[in-house]
Structures are given as C-alpha cells and as structure tokens.
Length: 132
Image (cartoon, rainbow, N blue to C red; front, side, top):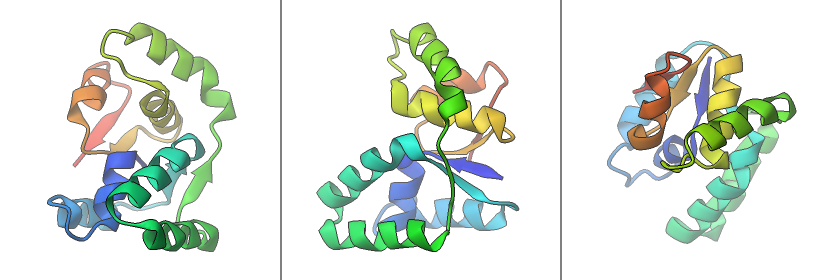
C-alpha cells in the first residue's frame, strides 16, 4: 500500500513529465491500494489545470469517481498533521505535505513522491519510507 503525494500524481498524469515512467513503474509494482489523501485533491486539480489543462482535470476526477484510488479523508490525522506543521515550520512543511505524511504513517508508511526536500526530512524520523 502506498500513499500518493501531489508531485507523484502530477508526474503519473503528465506523460511528458521526466519522472512519469518511474512513478508509474513504482506504483505498478506495489501491492494493495493506492491511497490518495483527500486534503491534497484541490492542490492536484489546481496543478493539473495550470500545467496540463482543464480537460485533464475532468479525466483525473473521473478516475477518482471510478475508484482507482482509495480516498482517505484523514480526519483522524489532523493532530499529527498539526504536530508536523509546527515541528517543521522553518522548512516549511505545510499542511498538504503534513496530511500526506500523517495518512501514510497510519497506512504503512510508504509515500510515493518526488519531493525529497520535504519528505526526506521526515523520512529520517523513521515513520515513512519515500519512494521511488
């Protein structure tokens, strides 16, 4: 089971992204559901619209509706996300990344992301494993 970050989702959707094939390969070799934290949906759709186009937002949302991802609302993750935001305020980590980390910690710890800067710092705590 893996939890997706925005950067991995964008790379998976955008076939021209330099990391597209790598992200797809990692996602395909993992077993279990691909978890998509609900708090990052707005960030994902905003970036898709800005970088790829509005039509692709529709396609992405259709895959969400079809159940291609296990959506996780992360309500129980708010206390952990707050703790992460506070602990890494100088980074800054931010709520979107903190929600992905909190969700991943609860679901086995694997995070598919290209954001080594933020997620790598937390990975050193030993609570998550950054893929690829």
